[in-house]
Length: 116
Image (cartoon, rainbow, N blue to C red):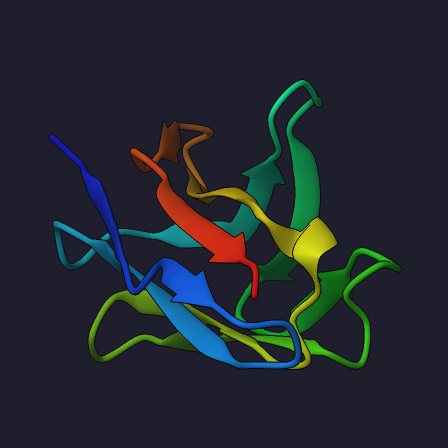
């Protein structure tokens, strides 16, 4: 069974930085796509950043220039570096992985709160 384990969330002041991580529990998987999504209270889940085939990167307009997604294949881990955080970035952040087989997996979510 494949599990995605997120870590690194927490409370940060506006303008601060945070890095969240997502580790895939099994190695040797043929991963096509990994990404971060977030869901704020009362809102729908939205795309934050994705990395496809380890090369193609996409960001939501709201985080461009502030967030950076990266993937370490040796550690089966994807990261989201978040800089210049704003209160509107407050949400539960979810990791997603899609295999070449089409299997789709989600993490349990990690809370990011931006507040003074």
